[in-house]
Image (cartoon, rainbow, N blue to C red; front, side):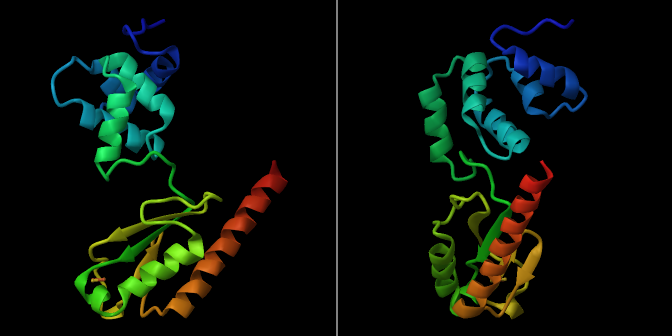
Amino acid sequence: MEKSPPGVPVVIMKGVMKTAAKKESFNYRLWKYDGAPGELIPLLQSAQEHFGYIPRRAITYISGVTAIPESDIFGVITFYSQFRLQPMGKFVVRACAGTACHVSGAKAIIDTIEDELEVEVGDTSEDGLFTFLTVACIGCCSLAPVIMVNDDTHGRLTPASLRKILKEYRRKGKKIAESAVGAS
Ligand code: FES
């Protein structure tokens, strides 16, 4: 059996063995960490890629390997908007805040999303169904104002049409969750 590098928990080493061929993996990066300056950000990016967000246990692993206190790592995570401490929802809602959408009412669209989903930009709803983000331009300005939900684009929105769309996703999400419970 392979030996664990000092400070790397066993659970991580299981992952290392499974994913050693994938050089960019979080576990591999942890394993090869050598204390060079500037490695914390790539480690955090790698953790986020691996888990979809940065869970508490990833912070503990990183702290164990790098000897950087967990509170400092947490500070770095909260400083950079690219990092997430919560998992993404089943539906990722991206509202365009680009120029064409802005002049076509993006503000009302963003307000409607926050109100309907009870989230703020960057948050995941309490039921875990929705994560809300804003983007600079989705690339279909002629349909402004526009949102994307996962890979689907919805354009020429009004607050009323948007509420209907979001309710439909919520209905779909609940149905999926119920059938998953029924199958287990
Ligand atoms: S500005 Fe919104 S899609 Fe381009």
